[in-house]
Each structure stands twice: as structure tokens, then as C-alpha cells.
Length: 539
Image 1: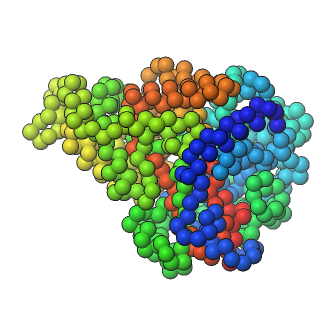
Image 2: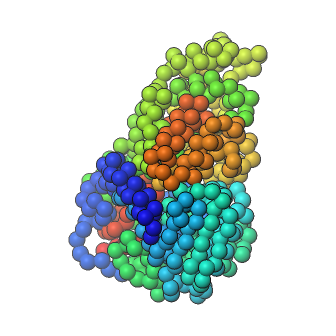
Image 3: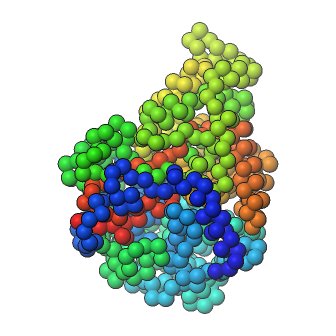
């Protein structure tokens, strides 16, 4: 690894240390990083049954963004690198080492020998090239992967186990991108399929588990990959996973998930709601919590809509939202109100809490200044048209609807009428791509601030229809510089521009909270607050 790689990983470690109390995995009950009781020796065998709240309708890791589905499909693929969730350091996985040019335009990966996919084919530099060359063709569901590879000039096979990725300009974020599930490596046979076929039929990976069955909106079943021997360098177990089988059942109702865990029908559940915490704590269950890095839960604004082109209207929405009330009322214990567009666990986060303070009087004043006058029903109008907006949302988390119902009440209190429009989880990406929305509720998890460029640059997908401004310069600049201090300054500038212009309305930080039976051991979070199950065992 070059000195530049070490500088960047050291920087991440230092930044992570600043927020260590919130980044580190915390548990209610015993075990800390181990969800079980800590007693006994690890044992192989058993099936882990995990109840999740939703199904994204796609089982291709390169196309899935919903955490509830990432939990399962992440186990199918390996990545070139991994990221330590406690230090932020990038460590070997499929690549045993790498070199980065001094200007961060060229990344050369030296692959581990002997790696095979579940169809028996070998991992080679050509396979990596096939993967990266195909990413731009993924379409609507491949936004994250496409963003990570934007600006790529070429992917070159140097020799059978050496691949070189060259960008047209410096791309400081790319090394961390290779640790994500979105750039998980798939067999060439999968890459040659259409994106739709990969979504519906699944993919061939080199990971510790193999997809056996996907019944949409019901379950995803995985089986242990026999002969697996190339896990991440940060995993404790060498070779095959402990568990024989993983079953992810889709159980939309939070209370039913909690009851299933208490009765022993399932071994772990996702998206534990505040209402179920008390019943689960203190028994044979451990609650695991970790704040998600990346873009916080909030309202993505379609800045091209006539009503939302006016910065005063956008800023009024920003001021009208009482983030603390939403966090304390709806979300799990410990959830923090948003203090920037980035979660505080993200490197180069800037505290903009003063810009996100709840101020209903300010919201009303902004709307008055924009010409919106309150009517007899309290809803504002201008030129005979009411100030009415629609928030599109998708049921991929139990907190979405109650959070938005509070937002709806808060905006009504300042004279904005809000209609809540529910869609199917599988429609999220196409809704963004099509642009038929005023506001959309969501978040994006990534432990690198370049997620701002992926989400808000007009030079990429620009789902939120932002106009070209100096924000583009800041976003492109932070991705291009290898000067860590300069990058931090540009990321800070980008956050301020997004928040102060209300191009997005941050609301709460997403905190992942899982509940796990104490018979389940070593179920840990990765750097993106998803899970890795290779080291997990039941006993």
C-alpha cells in the first residue's frame, strides 16, 4: 500500500476517534460487540432466522440500497477491500494489497489467488474489469455503484491477478468505495445478465453464503458456501462461516417481529421500534445500536417544482420541522436529531445545528415574505393557489409513517398543507429517476462524505433537480483533492450550501437498532451499520 493510502486511512481513524462513543457498537445487556452471552466455544451448524420489515424486490447487491435487503444480499458477495467500523481503516479482502498514485487517479489492486465464485469460476482481474465496466449500465437501481465509479477512464487487466482502475481526475473516495456492497464483486456470468435478471434471479458471488431462494415480500434464503477460504482480514474466523443457513423473513409489523423474537420463532429482528424496547430489554434478548453514517433521514426536495424553486419556501420547511420532537417521539432510544445533512458519525461532518433549529415564527415570516398568506383554514395561499405539497414515502422502516405524520402536523402549523403518498419499496429508485414528486423521505448510508456528491451533484444523476451552483464545485473538489485538510474544508462548504439553501431538509439521524437472541453470538455491525454474518454462531 502506498503512503497516500496510509495517510487516508490514518485520517479516517483519527476522525472516527473523535466520535468514538457514538460510532462504536453499543449493546443493551451483556456482550458489547458480541450479541450473545459470551459463554462457550463457537460452534458450526444451525440456521439463523432473521425477521426484517421489508423487501426491496431485488437480490443484486450492486443494485440494492435498502438496508433491510442489504442485510441478506451482502452475505453473497465479497469486496476488494473492507472497512474497519471502529477505526475507519481500509483493510484487505479480495485484494491482498493495493497501490494508489500520488494524485489519486490510479488504483492498482493485487488480488488474492485461489478465490472462486459459487459456480466454480475463478476471481481474476478480468472479472473485476467486467464488473466495473458493467456498472454504468445498471440504470435506476445502480445509482450508488454508478456514483462510486463516475469519472472512470479505464479498468485495465495488468496480469491475471492485477487490475488497474484509472480515473480522468483525482478520485479520493474510490478506495473506500471498493469496501461497499454496491461494488461487491460478482461472477462474469452474472455481470452478463441484464440488471432486471440480476434483480429477480440473483447473482453468483464469491461470498460466504449462496442465494438459494427469493420469494418477493416473503423471504430470502441463503446457504453456507462450502470451501470458502478468503474472508475479510478483519474477520475472526478463517475459512467457512459457522452457520449452515440464513433465512430472512419479511415481517412488516414491528410488534409482530418483536413477538416472534420473544417466542423463539426467529433469532433476530431489524428496525426495533421505541414501543417494543421495554418488552425486549432485560430478557433473553440483546439490543444492538449503531448510528448510520451518510445522508440522514430527511426530505429530499425536488428543486425544480414551481413551489419549491423559491428558496424562502424551502427554508420555511427547514425551520418548521421540530427534529427533536420527531426523534424523541417516534425513533428508538438514543436517536439524535439531524444537525447537518450528514450524520455526525461521517468523516468531515460539520455541526450545523443552529441552521436546523426549530423556529415556527421564522418559518411563518419566510412564507409571508414569499407572498403566501394564511387563509381561513390556516393553509396559506398565493394568487388563488394553496400551498400544498406531497411527500412520497415507502414502507421500508416502521418509523417512516409516524415520523411523516408529525412532519405533516408541524408544517400545517405554519400554513403548509401536506399530503402523504405511500409507494412500494421497489418503486423508490424509479420515483427518484422519474422526478414525479415534491418531497421524498429517505436516507443514504455510506461512511465517506462523498455520498454528498452522489446524492446532490448536478453532474451525476441529480435526482433532486438542483440547479448548477457553486455546490457542484465543492462536491467535485472534495472528490478530487488528496489534501485531507482541503477536503475537509470543501465537505464543510458543501454541507453549509445544502442546508442553508434547503436543497434538502435533514430531520433525524438513522440509528440502526437490532434485537438479537442471546443464544446468537458475534452478530456485529460493519462500517455502514449493516451486518456481517460470517463470524456469527448459535449456541
